[in-house]
Length: 163
Image (cartoon, rainbow, N blue to C red; front, side, top):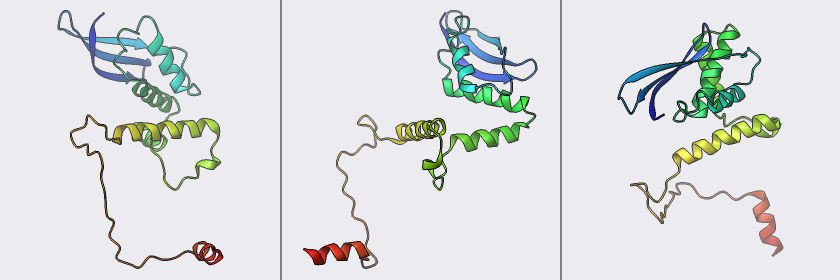
């Protein structure tokens, strides 16, 4: 089925993912309600999103919807099941999807570290300048202003005297 996803949202009661799409053959806008079953406040959002996206009944409709967006919708549903308000859930998702530069990544477990690395990779890909970009310049040389005299470090002076 050829369809173009327009909007994707969530309904809390009864839990369902709602997709508004346009049928390319007929040019009509339609709504598809995909019920969320067996999802509790302890469920894994990424796993639930993967299962829904790979479900044979919904696969054709969800091709254009990213897995990250589905995970985020399931996070909203899980927050609602925990009794959090929409604002609290949005704040929690914002904290989980941004990197704190002061956070010590050495103290994280493997799963959290992989999550942070994927966020950093995604941000890098988004900000990366490629050859096809209109503002791409091949060899940039930048001169940094030196207002102050360079300070020498203790380890630097010791090694200079030895030679």
